[in-house]
Length: 406
Image (cartoon, rainbow, N blue to C red; front, side, top):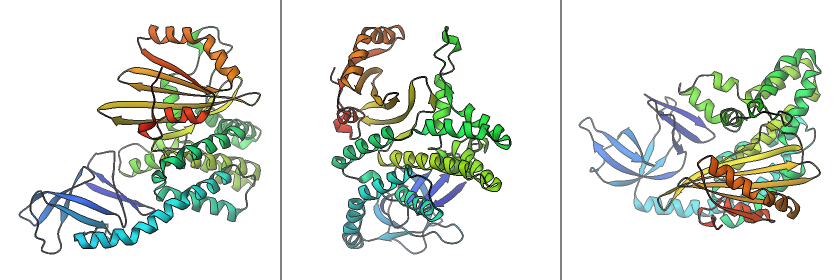
């Protein structure tokens, strides 16, 4: 069974029970390989390494194995997705006319992104400003933000980390909202629900079993932090996952809080919830820009005011890379960032922070190595950087930039 979901010019085609959709962008020109031609006149084509069956509407001189150009057209009212076959000359003309337009869009993206990030931390917003922010968010999700030149991605990332480090962290905002909700009798139940979505690390516990942070709980909290909301929504539409996964998502909870707060006339709650939603949308734009999963750390730790988490994986020269970037906001305006990269079950760790914090970590370097050894994991090397841009390179914003020098 084939189902399609159209969102902001992108067609998500769900085929059978497959959870990952085939994505087609309206107006995009693609190459398609003819995999088979049936006696009915239908053909089987391969696009973006995925197989689709297509019905021809005119006679085409096609043979099995041919490579053709197709342009994705706007779907018909009945849901049919037309792919217009182009000649080589058509493609050259189209790409020439679109090339400058695309280049201009990419050139303007950093300015749009900075404007968007500025709006994440804006104080109480009027309705028209909130609408402008939402429109900009939707625009950035549909534009090729991942195609920003690599030379501009690192300065952008540095600026974003600076933004998140200098403002109220998302976890701090959530804690403030929970306290505010607890003060209102009609919101106490949802306050407890939001509190349960955060992980509370008990540093006063004397035995390991009393610690509440586990890998399973952390994974669940990260996936319910709102960044993956739209992805989960598409899976619900295609009947791949149950609707409960949407109801447990922070974006759903916040939208419900905003609706209820407006009905009760509690604008203070509306403002705080909208501020958190804006930051979640910022993480969604970051995730798309850097082809990663980027969100806030849904953990409340003693002496740590918040943090950000990013994960990405890729394959290079036949090797699988898994790399995590974590930035922690510590009290007294200190911060610590670190990257953990795994390559063929060997781990490489890099730290970035003030010279005082790095010196403190070095005191426990032997203990860190011993913990890896006790867990049966190989620690290939540890690096220390005072400049966060060096650490960003280790997070492999560009695959060629990753370094595993001990």
